[in-house]
Image 1 (cartoon, rainbow, N blue to C red):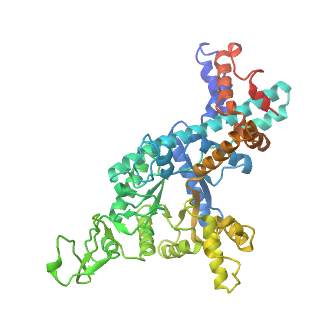
Image 2: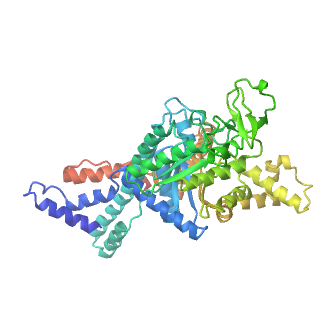
Image 3: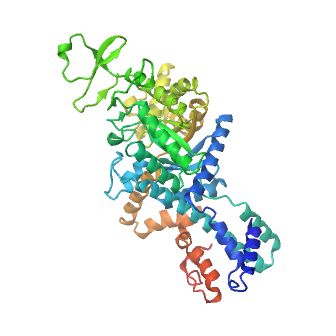
Length: 530
């Protein structure tokens, strides 16, 4: 509490025989409150407890699902949480997501890279640390403004206002929220996964998302050519993540096990099997094989025994083996059950389209074995949401026998249909997708992986078109600065957002009347005071 900090520091200063008399106890208390989290592990423990509480709340009420948006820079994450607090008054059930795709595309020293685990793995914990640095600065900024209001209330003799502000300080809600962080396929073997997991947890991550693809063949979940690993290989990496959490004292750490099996038709290895029906045997049962009746046709091939028959798994020139077509959903279900039974907390099923019944069909089967199974789901920009949902409505209407003569299913993305009844119903289904999917398909957490990648490109395109065109400076003023002012966007005062006022406060603490402050009457940020 505010006054408790002041009292503690007052006593400490008093024991220094006057040597610390230039230190103001209240200034120290303010700095302490502005820096609530000392280390990334403090953050990981705090945010893990939040996620565990939210998971329990969702088990009781599926309407209590959680959400996040992907981030590729600390400023982006900071502005999201500032906006959430401004619009909704609370950060409750709202997280951040760290996308490996965006790290690869935007944070690698090699320049833009595809989502294939080619970027520097150290850039992932570095981004986690950066995100939390900016979130902690948002706390310091918001509290700093409250401290200035407290001083103004005191100068005005408004004791009621001062008490209200002090209560607000003591009940301040931090901008620090859980980050679900993408560790890809672990960037190597289980030991490499463990070492990277430790770095990510030490930076503040309370939730690690790991996928069952081969690390050196990893692909974006929405691209072709995905190759999965046998279950025992994946479980070793899940255990590596759990060991990292436990070693660092983050006992509530969350592991999100992602399966790419729905769209992955290849495997690099044939699983080791000790006896019929074990995990290795179940994995191999999905292989596309042909029976061998003539051993003379065998030429350096791998042969497996399937129900007493010699079978040759089909091997491609790439040395990869392929699964039977149509087995993706069954493999996903087995992946999910196995992961939950061996240490994972949440599931991620990567799909090729946003279709609630497709997801629910798999979740229903998983929950027959693990009743409280919960998903993290990628509301991906890789999906054409408009086209997918218009086609879903079209197909349902066709099944109901409705007249569709005014629609061409192949052209439903066309703006010609934007004002139609079908488009309106599709948009409503998109609007309620998260709520409906959480209730029907067990989705605890909804995220968008790459939102600000696309918003940055769109807003930059619009600004460039206007500023370098006929609108000139009005293109910036009308569509950026004026909107910031009208909508109360905090960073319209960019000096304040970058920490200038915090620096002035510190100058006052350190030098008193001799402080040379930046926020005087000639600071042009004063033009935005109204």
